[in-house]
Length: 305
Ligand code: CP
Image 1 (cartoon, rainbow, N blue to C red):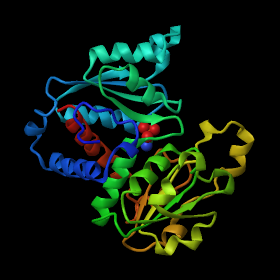
Image 2: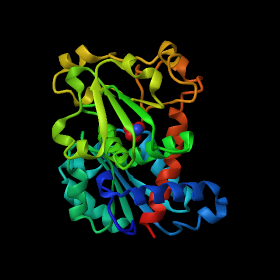
Image 3: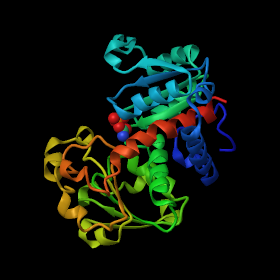
Image 4: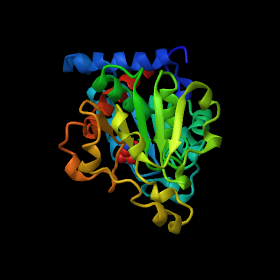
């Protein structure tokens, strides 16, 4: 992508390393700015959100980011309260929203939904989660957190554990990480390994190992990125029950981590990180969620200019 202005953000694969670095710089700039200066950035602009799946962080952080920039936001947080309930199509819903707003944030259960929306929208579409495919703004926030907390991304050992098959944040994160010189260790039950059909060309640009055993890597990791088992995406509940609770990060696991390593999670967590770990110095997942407000403010400021 040459520049962000009025462009869609559908896949993190469309962003170059320079694009990512521009977002991190803009994020730092926005954090440093005076509140009244920030409020000028999107004054008079409106963000529309269309969430066809539940969300806490992504929707609220986009709304919070828009408020920070002096703009307004409105939208559909629950499709059952919209005319989708009467049978209105996604295409028509997007067309209508694009007439009311300057950009649209879309979350939908179908792979390809954001790409499709971008084809019918007259305003930029930001993918806030499309099926099991991608969640690019989450990955941007994850990469920013690593850089902010560890000083750099290059040279780091990064473990990603949990549901690598259905977790869309994982695919965006892997593609984002392929811009950097990192060692990635993918740890999951055999049945939840990453989908080879969704990692096209990834091996050429990213060095990674696959294993079921977190203990093999835990002591060397700089980042442990934990993901939730995505119960809602399993076609068969029995298959979910077999892998439920496969990895639980408790204090015993954190004790094996390096002192200066970080523990991340896109959230929500269910039981894969024990709450007693929350006060450990490695636990950065709530900080990571807060950075999401600023990285999304940076994305909006670049896109709406
Ligand atoms: N990480 C994330 O996408 O959280 P929400 O589902 O709450 O938006």
